[in-house]
Amino acid sequence: MSRLEGKTALVTGASRGIGRAIALELARNGASVAVNFQSSEAKAKEVADEIAALGVKSLVVQANVAVSQEARDMVKKVLDAWGRLDILVNNAGITRDKSLRKLDDESWLQVIQTNLNGCFFTVSAAIPAMLEHAFGRIINISSMNGQIPAYGQANYSASKGGVIAFTRTAALELAKSNITVNTVAPGFTETDMFTEVPEKIQDQIKQRIPMGRFGKPEEIAKAVVFLAAEGDYITGQQINVNGGAYM
Image (cartoon, rainbow, N blue to C red):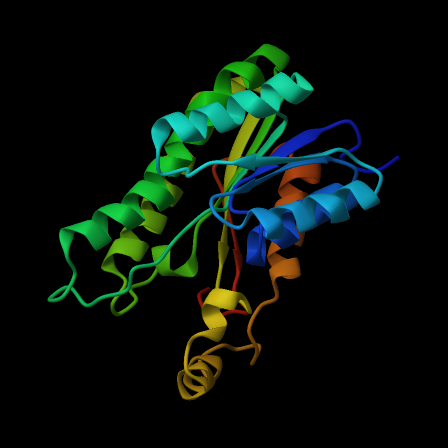
């Protein structure tokens, strides 16, 4: 029997990168997976097709998690389709990097709204169904840059640090209901977003990582599946997947 057979999952921002890897790893372990996307419908459908090929159910759900009603409607669509939501992975996130002297209100608000507020919207929408079934595994994707300062990322670091704090409070409030809430904090990971960083800068970053390499999306996904499948007595915690860059 697969570790997550019979479970249903929703992964936000699942059309590419870390979200895609998480969705596929959950499916490989037997979960039915709803693939959320904002604009990359074709890529989301490709992920859903890969999931279906593994012999489990898939569902494609469009929503901008920064918009409260869209995020809540997305959760409702999953519940309408499958009757329950066992695993929620908040992965969707954006960056708008600028130094504080150049950071404008819009760039600040966009990042906070997507990365932090979007996390609240989906969690609060999922809680009633999880309470009804006395089961829930919520995994919020934070970042190493929510733990340490990062030049030009005041908005991103604040949003991801907020996710860590939000996770702990949610874990405390939901612990007695068999709903665990944890965060996975990736370090520098080989995604489309990171490949845009100039090679010279990548080399400088790599020199600061004890393991001497960047992470792979699949390595983040394995940590998520561990919390979903094996983390029955783990809540309010963060798993750092960063090659030792922050200990």
